[in-house]
Length: 104
Image (cartoon, rainbow, N blue to C red; front, side):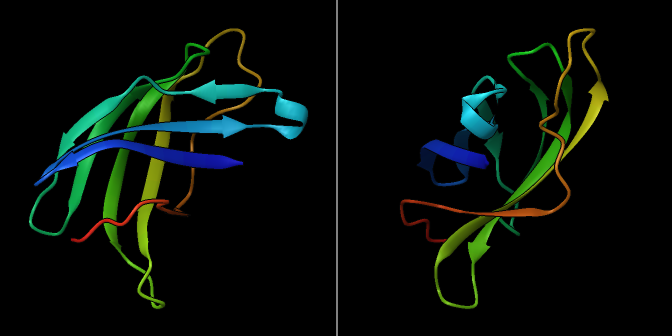
C-alpha cells in the first residue's frame, strides 16, 4: 500500500512524505520529508531518498478528482538501488487521495 502524508501546505509550499507498506507491514519504506514549491499548475519536481538506501526523482501534482475530492498524482523514478533492496518506492502514475482538503 502506498501513501502520501502532507505535513504542511502553505500557499505554494508543500512538505510531504511517501511510504510503502507491504503485506504484514513488511517491507516498510518511507522517504525523508520532502519540501517543494508548486508551480502555477500545482505541480513540482523533487529528489527523494528512502529508509532503505534507495533514491530517485519524482513529480507531484495536486488537484481534484472528477468527484471533487482532493488528490495528489505522484510519479517516482528510482535512480539508485541499495545493495539490500527488497522493494522500491518507484511508482507509475499512482493516484493517491488526500485525507485533508487541499484547495488548488
